[in-house]
Each structure stands twice: as C-alpha cells, then as structure tokens.
Length: 344
Image (cartoon, rainbow, N blue to C red; front, side, top):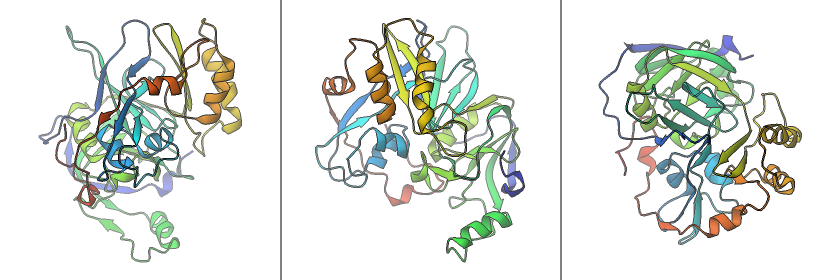
C-alpha cells in the first residue's frame, strides 16, 4: 500500500475540466493499432551522433526514458557516447494486455500508453510516453481508476515527511512550498487519478524520466504532459500494472521483452524465467528456450524474437542502416518544467 498520509498536499490555481488552451508541440510516439492480431508497434532504429549530444538527448528526442536508452546500449557512455558510435534507439514496443482503453501504465516497463477513443472512419491509435516512477518505499498503487481532475499551474505545499526526507539527505534548505512555475516539481500540468494523491504530471527535472524519482506519482517530460493534457477527458480510465515480462507476436514470429523488476512490487529477478514461460505458453509456434533464457538474463528492453530459427538481436541490429542524428542538444535550459521548443 502507498504511504498515503505522506503524499504531497496540492493546491492548484486553475481547475480545468475540459480542454485548455495550451501551445502543445506535436509530441508523443503515436502508432496505429495493429489490425492483424499483433500486439507490437514501432520499429527499432539505429543512429550515430557527434560530440554534441548525450544518450539522454537522444532518448528525449525519441520519446524514451533513462533506463530504456541505457539498457539498449550497454557499455556506451551516457554523457560521451563517442562520435560515430551506433546508438540503438528502442522504439519498438510490446503493448500492454488488453483492453486497450484509456491510459495503461506499466511500472516495470516505465511507460504510459494512451489509447484515444476511436473515431469513426479513422484508424485506432496508441500514444506512448516514457515515465518517471516511484522511488522505493513510495510504491504507486496497482489497479484501475480514472482521471478525476485536470490542473494547470499547480502549487505544492510539501508535506513534513518529504521535507524530512530531503533534509536527512543534506538538503537543509529544501522548501516547504513551491509556487506555480518552471521550478515546481509538479510541473506545469497535472492530471489527478482516483488513487489518493496520485497524479500524472510534468516535472522540473525531465532528465529523471525513466528513473525511480517520485513519491508515487507518474512523471512525464514537460512536452508530453503538454501534448496529452488537452486530449485527455476527465473520466478517462486508468489501469496501472507491473509487468516486467511481455510476450508479443508480429507476423509469424514470437517476441519477448524483459525489463528489470522494480523493488516494492510483487515478483523478483529470480521469478522472471517462470514469468516468461507463462507469457509465452499461450502461443503455438515452436519456441527457442535457450534464447528465452538469454533474453531473461540480459534484460535488453528491446523485444527479441524467440521463435526457433528467428534471427537474433545482433543480426537484426546489424541489418539496420544507421541514420545521422543531427539535432541540437536540449541543453541545461531544458531541465525545468517548461516544454522545450517543438522539435521535428
């Protein structure tokens, strides 16, 4: 159970129940939902960089979080990837279990999936974002709820328990109040769930997206909060799950994706192989169990084919022609709650 008594106390200056006027950039990794029985969207990409950008710049540009970009590129320096180094961009995702309705948050995968209401004569879509999740001892509750409020420009009165936590770590002058603005840990837009004091919101430290950084809330990049906020009706269903092992099917191949288990939730590192076996048991094609064990051990984040005779991950990556990543770094000015300028 979450530490509800220690949750942040939030006062908001503006309550927004419908759409708001917000200059939202076109953000979010948006994909058409499969119509052939598959449950996998997107494609792996490979890029090369110059000396200007870090792995975190690449991650943010491609709607990925800290852990995703690190695990997809073991051995690559997060701050100095190296000019010309091929960087794997893990933008292929096994979707969460159905129903594909509203918001689904997978804690271990550190991703949020938004399934907008399907409009007639238009393809059904899913939008997915990386998220910052709760730190140990502040677990986000699992289960189903709804969005019950939307708030612009929140202010935050910091509970005593959180003040004490920061001061015990040497932050003697940690504030007891944060006014609305780009330095507010709540960000500039927040969506309240039906779980007590659990919000989906922006953050003033976007480089922490993908890490365990919150006191139970779900953190978004500021630009992603700005993207989803005007689209999300009050009443939208929210389902929060913790599923480190995901199995998927695309074409004639089975895939397996394994994320690192998150402390504070059921399951453990030792339980991953049995979870993988359970996840794959519903499929009929022959399975390469040696590769399954390799994927479980490596936890590469990427979906890896595990059908007998399927190409391995190294072969798949070798077949992808790298493209040049030629964008300016986000820079230190982008490490607050304001959305940066829209990027292609």
